[in-house]
Length: 373
Ligand code: ZN
Ligand code: ZN
Image 1: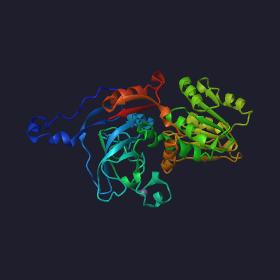
Image 2 (image 1 turned 135 degrees about the vertical axis):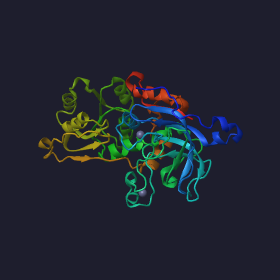
Image 3 (image 1 turned 90 degrees about the vertical axis):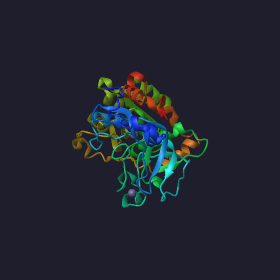
Image 4 (image 1 turned 120 degrees about the vertical axis):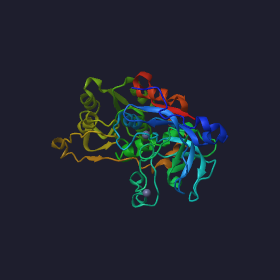
């Protein structure tokens, strides 16, 4: 599926560029650009400029690839159009701010949140940044994203988080998306409590981030279910008490055996396909919670014929990143060590190779890849 990067636009400035004393190169940058399903290229794009006074221009230091980016590359996310720079995670250094930005200045190091939020609208006031009327998940979706040398961040005051000197910036890339996503959509919505038996269905980066943040609440049993033995082994080193390889189709039986036929207090769906959501429906105990994290592209069957009387709660959520400051403090104190999720390193200019690795995660034993600019 991966194609070698070939810039599609002619270098029209080449002949006249010599007279402009480098002006053109100051206005250009390299970026990973989506060109329709299965098509992407590492190519020249104009360097972003301030559009509103609430914007900041950030030079990317480190970024990463998300499972969502693979969905985009398959054409599953129709809001992403030809020519879009993708990516919604990263850390960087502020290059320029608009006159209305008061929390940041040139030279500050920052975490870029995957969610853009104004902090002022009805939804932001409720802490529901994901539904901000002038933001939400727009980076690498409706506006150009972070898999580039520079990115424009709208509503910079509320959408960036400061990084103090000496922090491990690589670990902090995990705070852009996966840690708050696992924690808010999985652990908080699932109402994980001390002593609970929980199941995490899917041991990719999001499932593992859910596992790491579930440990705040000391569940008694953490059962992780996946098709890939390598990922299940990683889950064990992160604190899973039991793992189930579901490739034989017997996950329900195995889980019921592990829980004396009761099922789990919290079933967390971290894949985004009908089979895994229906697995959660089959393994939730009476009074339990099903917390959906996965991005679903197809409808799933709701088994009300078995669930109507079971006092269960089903939750859905797009990450709000409202817990990022709390998670940041736990990373700083080393209570939370998201660096464990990083398996591969590339230069940003090797992004095509990094995609190839991430797309073949099982073969490459890949979790998160870090791209350094
Ligand atoms: Zn992501
Ligand atoms: Zn808002």
